[in-house]
Length: 90
Image (cartoon, rainbow, N blue to C red; front, side, top):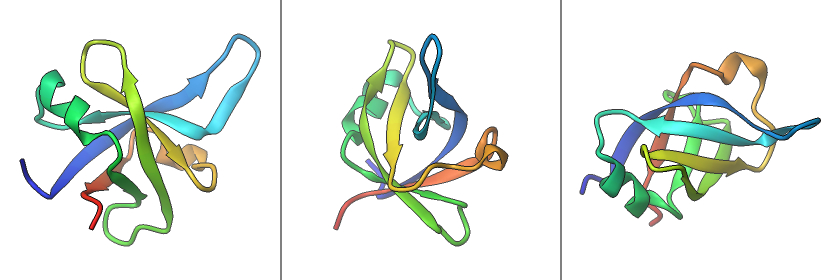
């Protein structure tokens, strides 16, 4: 496994009548679903070049390799469809 990956923010975590801006669904690029489950607990930063909003991967979401990330501050709407950096905890 590498020490750094890139992922795409798919959407916020949605409820029936609510939207959780602190929790986002992300898809790791070029990684199999079995490998993406091993990334739970790693740090996530947005944007890729200079991470200002930092979070952590909390759990997997479904069977296709999508992950759920919880951020300290809510991600803005511009982050949906944008890339994030996944970094191993040191």
